[in-house]
Image (cartoon, rainbow, N blue to C red; front, side):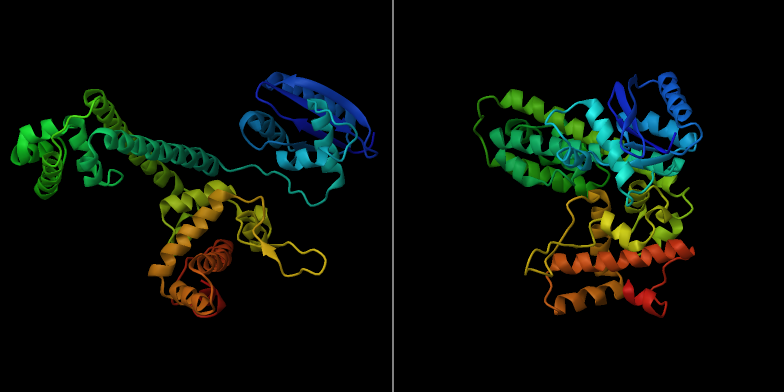
Length: 404
């Protein structure tokens, strides 16, 4: 039996695996539950069919329902390739028939792996990188929940107490959130008054007397500007109370999660190197490890990493049109965000990065273009630092420092 290519159309409860030979003929096709015993049996059957010849496995998911299957293949030393679902979708149009089945998708995955030579094998991800991917993904979810809760809170307040809604920035003011857990209506704020309200705020977690006093002054001033009770005020006030507590609870959970992320990130051998770059702290460093798997060698070159991060433009030339560069359609949004945000900070605080940014602006580039150019250069520097195992030094002579 010649070399085999086995494609798996992964799902939540079941997978479909199709194996083909060097001529593209189907030699094996089976649907299996997403269960360890069944998957091990599938692995053994395909390897028996290969009879000692190499098998290249391919999947259309690299997480989620395919995680157990990937872990089994990697732990058994199998060559595994990840083919994105979008690639499989577009490739399916080149095959006969307009129908879509799991068996056909598995065949397309296997045949794509057979014909293409530019696909990178999946490698085992370190425990720290997996933990950081889970923790940072959770942090993103909680941050999105917090933003939604604050937006709902402000929208609700705008309906019955617009003066108080305008009085504070609830995304940054903890004292304003504490206020809303006790007092939400104009009448209630007028009754308690400035002095008693400031004392109440101090007794409920507002740390400084100045913060309590300024919050009480702003709240009572807003209350004195409105004497009309809008219909539905009592119910709306209850919703505001609930939302304020929800935001405070999310703040506490995010703070605890960030402490976990920082501690786990610091256990990575490259943590010191990564955070030595101006503009990269523990959170952005953890995002970098989570998005790259913690091993830049898997990308092969900084150019490849730049392409994955969306920092390497690709040509869109046709006919007489040339030099038309655009951002690639597929790239890691998390990596791009990490490099963009760190470049923005470095452009303000790092002398070398500030000089590079200013030079790009003098060349006529917009702020966004200059930041992206800086991010691309900083990616090269970060790659070299991790490769050489040394930390960033703004005083370093030579091209490495100039490229920062």
